[in-house]
Length: 422
Ligand SMILES: [Zn+2]
Ligand SMILES: [Zn+2]
Image 1 (tube, protein in one colour):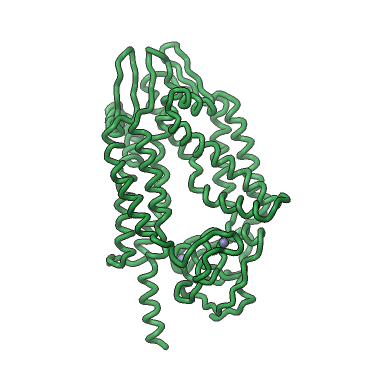
Image 2: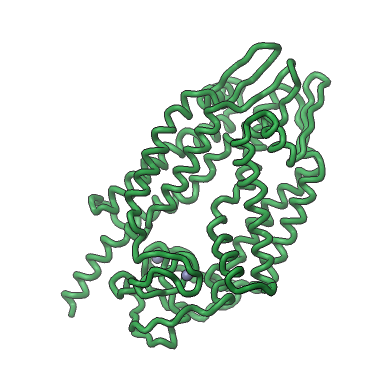
């Protein structure tokens, strides 16, 4: 189906497989997915402005409540230890574990709070300079992956199980608001449609190239702006709408991905060999590595939690590194598997990667809560920082990988078939 320039506003390039799709008139509550790779392209929400704002305001309010009251408490032989959310980074700063405290502050509190404020500003169309609005939207979508509030919550639950062996654990007044905060911030992101919000900020730039739907953008000499979803001529490096720079395919994508991957693989070895935390009980220090922690949990009968930690901390990073390696190898056109299979692997890597942070958050909670002097205290150790770096590096590795490379070998076949037909 050929389309003229009037239709440009309704065309979209799939960010995963580069297929040009004509968007149908969506009814409220319906979403459009790519016919080639099933990726969600855009969704039409009932109240596109008020719904995300409502969730974002509620999330911020819940976060405020969660910071005011005690979060969790622990009672060991009559000694009670109680912490609030804000005390967790404070304790780490005071004990010279500032890198852990910074991880915690950024991923669990600052980034989610910043994103919620940005959603309110953008959806309510608050008066501000156009450039400022563009920057806000740009940072918002970049920060989305780094909101780890729900992973921290999972970490808290795991630490409860770990601590149950030592004493009574109780949740404080702010625990429920924190759970609600996690829920509301996820919903706020879900209801915010990238395609819609960028069109609200400014309509997409016009493009004077005849375009054909159902064909990849690369073949037609156009590229997608990964940030604002605008369709741009392939040779245009800077997007006129959001000012992001880009190319038809990310430059040196495979080289960057492999470099980050090798670095994380090197760090993965000491991260597993060195202790991630130190438990001090009655004057003696017990160092424990990730694997030792899992064995301890297993031996005390906490099989499900031991499994969760084993999968999240050992299996996922390892499988993720192997999967990214495989994706790079396949993108170099050595692979025998079809693009759909490789796309599924990429989606899995993107989805599970962040969850490996669980163990880092478990250590953060344990070391903040278990401070009972000589009786029993837990401190983070070097392994934890190395492990967090491994997770972050693998997250960057999958971000620098351009998923469209996976589909390009299918494009070649597509081109050949079209040439034969004509
Ligand atoms: Zn697609
Ligand atoms: Zn753009």
